Every structure is written in structure tokens, then in C-alpha cells.
Image 1 (spheres, rainbow, N blue to C red):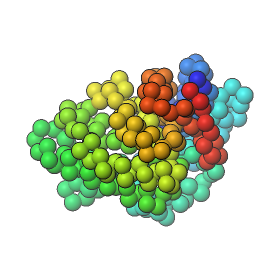
Image 2 (cartoon, helix red, strand yellow; image 1 turned 90 degrees about the vertical axis):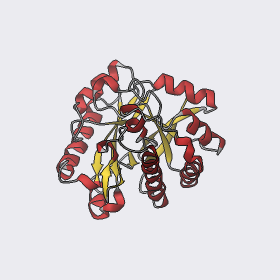
Image 3 (cartoon, rainbow, N blue to C red; image 1 turned 180 degrees about the vertical axis):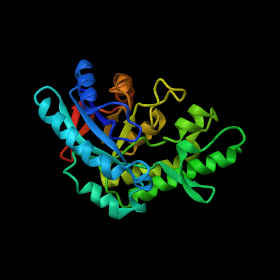
Image 4 (cartoon, rainbow, N blue to C red; image 1 turned 90 degrees about the horizontal axis):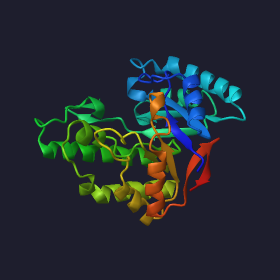
Length: 273
């Protein structure tokens, strides 16, 4: 199986630990066919994350790597943009910087204590009543549904990501299928709008130890007629590039998917299993 990792962060993300050169060298060592460098553009954190300075550097280094590794490794231009609707003026400036191969959409912030807060910064520990944890998860799903009403992106990434903290970091044992009807509505919107669903492998090998979304949601997506899937490691360090892709592929194959996709010039390309 050809391996295309469609979600990788470089040092041009505020939390990235690897250069684009390191990404490419590691991808070749792991015999990947292609990588998409998709640095963060979190619209609610443009100033602290220095996004308007970093994104031009990201594009420049991606383009240089694509030229250097031509014929050896496909290197695609990407961006992961969250909370687009909270700052559409700057979002449009970022999207106008280049012709991206793929635009990833995500939700990183939810309403908490009267303001929008990154769910990675919320303490979901035992002092938080379990009903409140479920309420925040429902708020996350509502935000996902909202961005899907006016999609600016090609792929929605790491659906169910709050579970990485709720269940992985804090061990709360939350069952997202309590909100199955909300999830079905989200998946239907993705299918209708031809937005790809990312199978994010970053939870494997962590306390969460699940794909995002997990196989129950992937099975629902298949049953609803969904086909457009990408694989993304969400790697911030080179050891995570392409991580657990064969495991993810086997899960998808057993569910009934015939392959997955990557994006080239914003067009989905099939990779058969």
C-alpha cells in the first residue's frame, strides 16, 4: 500500500518540533510516497502563535522541499485552519498566500466559563462533574456541525479530538456514542458537501489508544455511504510520521472501505488498499 500522510506539522507550527527537511528525510526512511505539511492557522491565537509570520515561511519551505525531493517523495502544501468564522478577514489572507493542495478544517476551541477556550487547556479531571464533561463534548460537536454548514476546507480533521484529553489524559471514560444522532448529522453533512473525513492516528500509542474517530464512527460513516477518507498522523515529531497507518488501514478494510485518499491541488486521489 502506498502511504500518504496528509497531516504533519513542522517547526512553522507553534508546537511543531521538526523541520520540513526532517519530515522529508524521515518519510523517505519510512518509505512513504507523499507527505502533506499542514501547519497550524488557529484564528483565535494568531498573535501568540505568530501565525502571520510563520505561514509564509511554511509555504516557502514546503515549496523548496517539493523541488528538492521531486521524483523521490511527493510534498504537498497544506494548512490546518481552526475557528475560521471568528476571523474571516485574516483567514482569507492566509488562504490567499498560495495555491494549497489541501485545506484542513478543525475545531480547537469550545465555550467554557463564558469564553472560547482550547479544550486542550481545560481540566477535565474528577473535580468536574461528569455531566459537565458530556455537556462540553456536546458543545464541541455543535461547533463541528456549525463549521460544516459553510465549509471552506477539503478535510475535517481529528473528529472527536476532545476525547484525547477527556479519556486519554484524564481517564473519564466518556462514551461519545451518547451523541450518536449528532454524529450521524455531522457525517451526513460531510458526505453531502464532499468534505473528507480524516482518520487521525495520533491517539494510537497514547493513553487514548484509539483512532479519531474510532471504528464505531467509521462504521457509521460507511453505512451512511461515506467513502472520502484521508489518513493523517498529526505528527509534531518525526517518530510519529505515518504512525499506525497499517493498523488504521486494516480497520478500514475490515469495515468495508476499498482505500483512502490524499489531496493534490485540492483534488482527491484514491489509494487502494
